[in-house]
Image 1: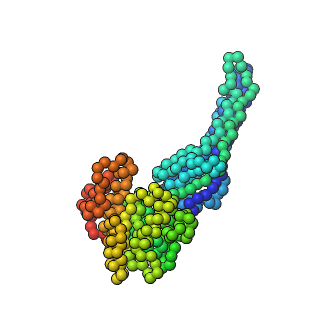
Image 2 (image 1 turned 45 degrees about the horizontal axis):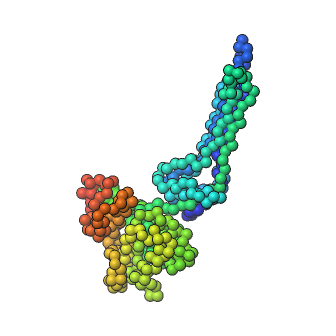
Image 3 (image 1 turned 90 degrees about the horizontal axis):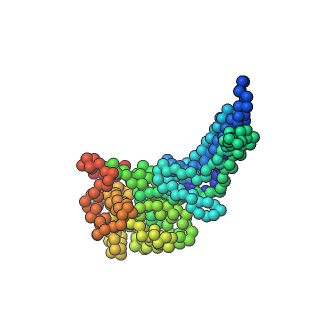
Length: 374
């Protein structure tokens, strides 16, 4: 089950109380204070776990409470520190204070950890209060209380490429062809009811994370259909792969009209989302009516349209290289302001997409025809 928003109660541990104790040993009169300090309370720590892609594992536990620190003891023994409570969340989770509505942390990197709710400090024992003028203090410091909060966790999937389009455009089929993901595939609208992730492996040890976003229809930004519940997941992607049906059934929008519908919904949801790098692909080219639809689409759009067939596997090799070049370009733009003329996606694809910094040149030389990447 996919869950991308949840509220939880968290409370850090209380600090242990300091100890009031005096040394008791034979032949040592008036041994003096020896009360130890209390241990600190446990912290609430969040960890971005790459093995999770939903908040569903947290749904069965509403309250998360860390362990309290143990009190100090005699003989200058410090109490044991409370264990931290580690909460594992998917990469891309945003943590909000429910009452204040402010964002506390955005966990966007694999393995990233953050202590959001620190535990209470342990109290000092009476030995810590001994001074030349106060030889036998009979008091100690109580432990500090822990902190408590209601948090709202919101997940925005982190992916390199987000696949968008009208229902039945073939997004799930394409994801299953390009990766080992096995989304539900059927011949009716809204087969995909939740985002699906897949890993695209390319020669030269190159890898892209793909996200299949449920189909968008007119009014999606206002809650029509599956609504805007999953549009936020596209905000994390570097590149948008706009998939169009080149041979839609009778009564369905034409490819050019379908393109305008989806682009309109993205613009209305977020102007920044509409400005992302976009790759347009015409799917279902194995059908006889697709060639005419492709020519009409190319005449209506000002961008390059890549013909593919997710079922037959044709055109996928070039599309993969185009996506790699587009993602590399998006990363370069994010890292530094662009200087000079930007690299054309078509030119990059024709040159087989110059390998990025993580590519092994020796492996690239061993590339073979891979119309159906694994």
